[in-house]
Image 1 (cartoon, helix red, strand yellow):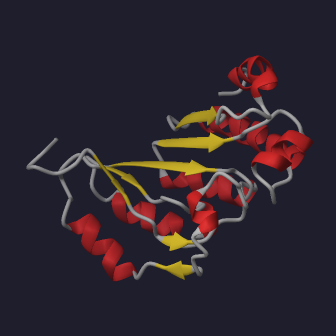
Image 2 (cartoon, one colour; image 1 turned 90 degrees about the vertical axis):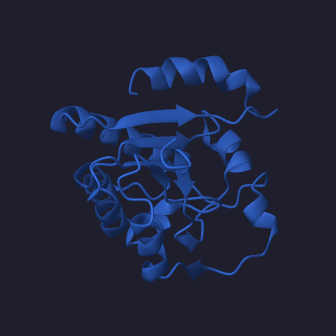
Length: 178
């Protein structure tokens, strides 16, 4: 910790998600989509510059729903001591987003993938096509290797009754890519 500041700051830059996960508290709060004013975002970042802060521009939202994300990350990364971490359901990670994330120098992305097949995934994260997600994440893994990006990628699974029988296969499969 530096100057009494936290190690990490989570900033919910918008309130929106492309999935409807039954376990997400945001799903039950009936929040209306909103976008944080850029002046507020910049003030938070400016007030903590130089303090080796890890910024997490997400909370109970999907960060890739905020089209300003590459610019917001660039603003954070003006500080060489800053790190940027994202948690994403990956459902919006197309080739354009993949390139933007690589170019933006995100330090770490954690993808929440709660199943190994569409029926299980539909129960955990409704609204996202599992087969397309899997294909896109494998492509992203290849692009990271091609570009020699130092970005750290993690995939993780929430331990649910519906996916417990898939956990060993999950670890075996995804460890090949990330």
